[in-house]
Image (cartoon, rainbow, N blue to C red):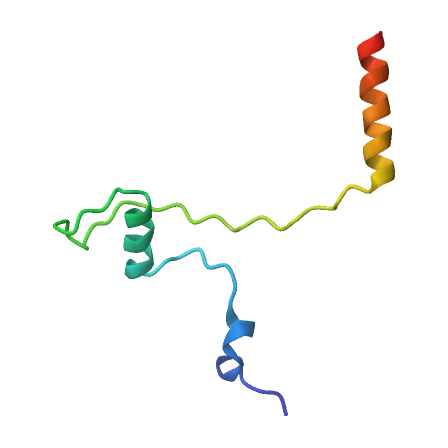
Length: 77
């Protein structure tokens, strides 16, 4: 029998969400210096929440040296 999704450990439930809670939106606005404590929490402006990019492939030393050779040959022409 499998475990229900709501009962899984917290770390496995962490993922990108498109919708932020009001507290998360206020926190992001404070980071951007667009929030004043006197402002109303109703009718908040939209806050972009982008999915973080994962690391790409790392260049190997051979690829780096090949790229350097190509750049120097292009400069000579």
